[in-house]
Image 1 (cartoon, helix red, strand yellow):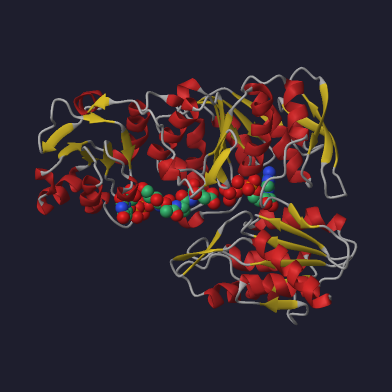
Image 2 (tube, rainbow, N blue to C red):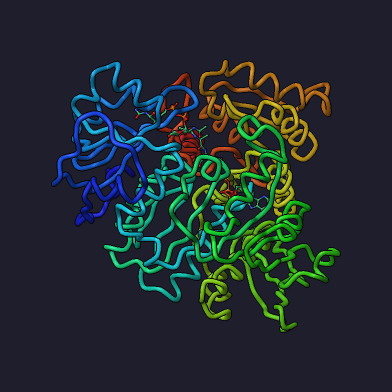
Length: 525
Ligand SMILES: CC(=O)N[C@H]1[C@@H](OP(=O)(O)OP(=O)(O)OC[C@H]2O[C@@H](n3ccc(=O)[nH]c3=O)[C@H](O)[C@@H]2O)O[C@H](CO)[C@@H](O)[C@@H]1O[C@H](C)C(=O)N[C@@H](C)C(=O)N[C@H](CCC(=O)O)C(=O)O
Ligand SMILES: Nc1ncnc2c1ncn2[C@@H]1O[C@H](COP(=O)(O)OP(=O)(O)OP(=O)(O)O)[C@@H](O)[C@H]1O
């Protein structure tokens, strides 16, 4: 399988190392820079280095990248770009004698601009749209990609699920890849004839400079809800990091959903021109918003919804979301306005979003109701607010009981665990608590924190089950459910692995669910 690290242009631009030094005002140490030395790529991780790369060694949260410079040099790095601390490490290890060391004040912030320069600013040769917010980024970018495809022959879409150029996709290591990888992917997209890009921009990416060196044509904001407070400290810090996408130099114009107070604040404080979109029918903010959803028929068949979008000139447009639930009306409305801001004709955008394909792990109907089986859905909700919305969306399509299988991530925000337990106990009928990605934490302790929340609503723990293996939890849920019930498995969505004690095991909710159905069919036969 192609790895993200190998998503590089096949005909990379070549620049002189001496020009890099001059352009970015770097100070040279270590081995002299040969006058004919050329760089053809950039990398932030020693194990991703290709011959001809400059290795950017940054101070990490746990280790200094310069500790890995030897591996980078052995792999063919032509120079190391680092800070004073990195230089000291390279000098004490003797490596500085083997390789030119280029010192700048803030190498992590330089990584994006340097990589953009090295690849001849590929972002400027594409229409680029970035989407941020706690929830809805993936869904919105897929809707948006559908609209961009209606106007562009080849598009790229980058995010949590995959890194896709045209019809070629590889698994994505995270929501937003590191800046050097991003610039290389953009260069490859240009090489393959792509003319438009839709990408997710996480708050981590904004805090860590992963979109540095790229000025988006249009950026979008979905919402801000509790998540990642382990990294950002508090909601204010989280908001500040998200807002960086709307800085001058990072984006030319923006589109902001103003359903929550954070979106309204972003509109008020944004230094770049923004259009506002209100997506809650009848809410007070609709009156002042540039775009507003003024009527919505939320599909109760679990398939989709139709809605009426009022434009800035007062014209009403009939639109549709191909995914169920109110949140997807919001995502569809945002995608339509983003596509329009990115130059797609409004009616074309509306038509394309209405027929966008299913998105892996987002309200994905894996088993249809019938032949003794419940409707079974896989969804990525992994925050308290998203869980409420997901359960609310499936309740109307559930004649029987609502069965949920879920857990919560290890080494991430611990405060949400009891909250999610409480929500499941209130909104679902049958609960199977299991593991998500325990990472370095004791899985039983995570489950017990969730169960504490469950117990606060349902002290007797009636219809509450616990399974330490996620695959077993899914088999249990399928065994418990009748045809009129709905099983919803939340938290991992499309994820292809489960991380337990530092090891990534191949694992996917959809595959496990389909295997569990086959197994039950075998038992029933
Ligand atoms: C919290 C966080 O985002 N950390 C990121 C940060 O790590 P760090 O500063 O701790 O890096 P470190 O481990 O100390 O290493 C320092 C440097 O040495 C380099 N190194 C390290 C080891 C080695 O063998 N060789 C090597 O070159 C590293 O590439 C890094 O540049 O910088 C590293 C690269 O410089 C990232 O890989 C790392 O992401 C980690 C893997 C991660 O899990 N991030 C998640 C939380 C994340 O980014 N999530 C968001 C949001 C998802 C969502 O919205 O749900 C995402 O965009 O995916
Ligand atoms: N606009 C929205 N508002 C609130 N919740 C939403 C919204 N859109 C989707 N969700 C819920 O959040 C889950 C994640 O959706 P999606 O993958 O589109 O978001 P995301 O921002 O990409 O998440 P992540 O960054 O964690 O990958 C969905 O499965 C759904 O339950």
